[in-house]
Image 1 (cartoon, rainbow, N blue to C red):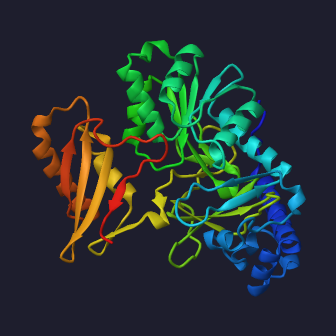
Image 2 (image 1 turned 30 degrees about the vertical axis):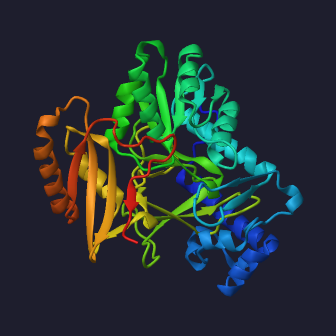
Length: 426
């Protein structure tokens, strides 16, 4: 019997969502001058909002609203009720700071506990946390959720590879929580130090960046784990834990009793039907300090309409395809890094790690794509492999790139999110 994940009929879930939408609009309008001005400008009467059917009458919010209300944007409670703040991991301009009441902190822990339950963990598991602490939500979210769930938390944080390896061997951690890049780096270090037979890892929960199936299989093999789970999350919606793969590994279940997801065309902002890829837009249903009304996440995905074979009644979205603002324009072609990943997945001798370097010479753009070969592949076929990859990229993505095959482990590794693109054209 589930401790943390409720089972709902479609009718019961819709009632919760309708009630949540109504509460959120009234709460925001009554308590946030920023939201009140925004809703009035859009001609919204909060008392006339009935629920899901009226979502399209509401204005969108986005990163600009969080910057305009700095330092405590969209605040809908008295400042005395705020018990914590977290901030986004953005590197340009002022960070997006989000406020939390105690109710929000408790809900954050609940959604993370649900993720541990969905991944099949139990109270005997030892969860090694390899993500950042401090203003970033990840470390605090994983730790508090682990404690709520009842497993043992090993809060090492990002980096500190020597300590991570020591905890893996001495404490016998059974689950690693990290970015995919950190999991790959850990796997390579475990192999380098011949520790695979000395660790007890069974699962990895990974997220916070785009990753390929090839990258996932690489760290699963290196760490010798049974399975891994892609986790969704964003600072604006508490932090990590908004969704997780179940053990069927066919999309991510999201907590539809805590927030509503719409999928819209990122250009026209018109809703798209289930199954079509677009930008995820989130409306919170019980968020206290900083409610979200049709918040544009920038993440590209789709709703999976069919019920999941695992039996969980929570709906699913697909793995993220990238971000609407990650798009690269190269010689007039719109490219998402995920499209390049999809092409590289078709080459068994190519590893998961790559880097795109773009430059401009006398007004003409050029792209160099460096790709690591797998440890099993020899260097003798590099030229043929590079030519085949370049041909596939031209055929599938319509770009002409100079492809260079490099040795395994030669591209930079990251404790956090990998930086895949260097654009020197400006």
